[in-house]
Length: 123
View 1 (cartoon, one colour):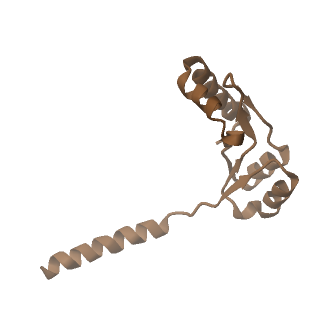
View 2 (cartoon, one colour):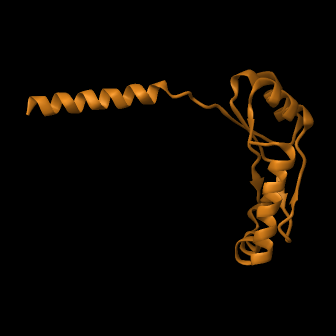
View 3 (cartoon, one colour):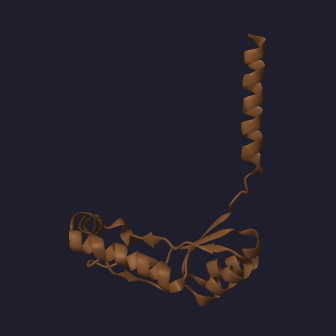
């Protein structure tokens, strides 16, 4: 019985040590305003992922929005991953319903997100 307990404790310590060895990630949500941009630029060396919340779908599934080029340049310089977020301004239920239930709109929204990340070399 004691051997089983000791083996269990050893296993838990091994798992805990492995978990502690993993690198922590620091995520920064960025809005499109200048204050948010300045905060990121000032602290980019402490951030591992930036997620700009500046893109939104239109009713056809197309994406609209723009990331400040300073964010992208600084992120690349500092090795920060850029993973944009697509927001639903006003939490429009009809818009999300259309994107999720209309096959053409859903396909276009997926293609828009893929093209955004591919064309801008986002992570």
